[in-house]
Amino acid sequence: MTSASALASTISYQGQHGSACWEGRHVADAKRFVGFVRDVVRPRVVDEPASFEPDLRGLATTGMATEFVERVLKAVPEPEGWEVGEALAECALKQDSGREVHWPWNTVRDRRTPRASLPGTDLVGFCRQGETVLLLFGEVKTSSEATAPPNVMYGGSGMAWQLEESAKRLDIQRSLLQWLHARCLGEPYRELYEKAVSRYLGSEGKDLLIVGVLIRDTQPNEVDLQSRGKALSGKLGAPTRVELIAWYLPVPIAQWPQLLQEAP
Image 1: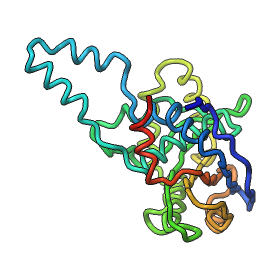
Image 2: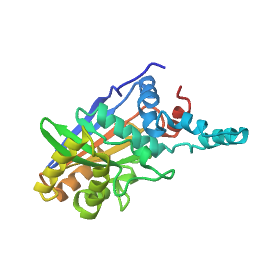
Image 3: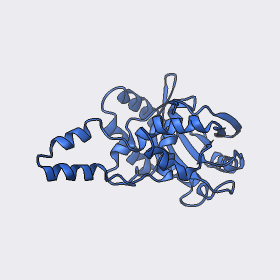
């Protein structure tokens, strides 16, 4: 399989209303997409420090322990489609969004139990634009539902409500700032943290980039994002920025976990 460092998408639609904008990106090349998942997304889903496996094997001093180590190393749950979707969103935002996005840590390493997630939001990082650095908080939803917009965009567990909560609730923001602080003690992330948080504090918590990423295996349809973008623009005014992005991908979501297992 040819390595793919980018999704090579085309813009299917764009829109803006007040402080919110939205965009749909279509990926037509299935072969390139598979390469992207295997080469770029996979390390964020099954991430392990390079020294972990050899170190664990080195601590086994008997034949029984050696056998048990191999059982432990193989005890990795197959990722769900939504887990692959979250990792894909991180990679796409960093490499294919036209932004300079920084994730201070691979969040997979922070999950002490399988299926665990960050408090309050899926995406936590920084967006640099020239000398300006903004806190980036975001949500990712993955859906194969034929309906447009899919149900994951609505209700108490839907994207729109969660994005609004991340932008308004100080308890969520405090938790995320504390999470970031522990992971930004050294450069280059310390500088990003100080610039972004100073801007956040100076604006009384308003100067944020709030990003919603919808991952789909359907045909592009602006209805997926338009109503949610308009609704959020009425609730989150400037200087808060809301950006909604939908990725329409050529391989069914149900097949994504298998793509990771087939990776070399």
